[in-house]
Length: 83
Image (cartoon, rainbow, N blue to C red):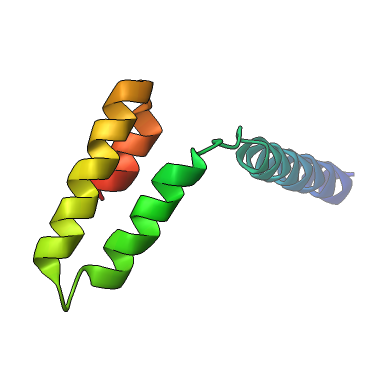
């Protein structure tokens, strides 16, 4: 009798743990996707390309991207350019 109560408690704890893990994984997986402006993506790829061997050119593209993001009022674009 005591062993079956212990097994039931352990089963309920394990099941609760699995449900909580499943809920957290599913809620993380359904985050909204961010739609980025194609021109900002282009500036980001240019910055990545020129960052190490022509840093002055990379800064030029960063500034152009930031100007565009500011005009569009795009916070995600600003963050991408500053990253």
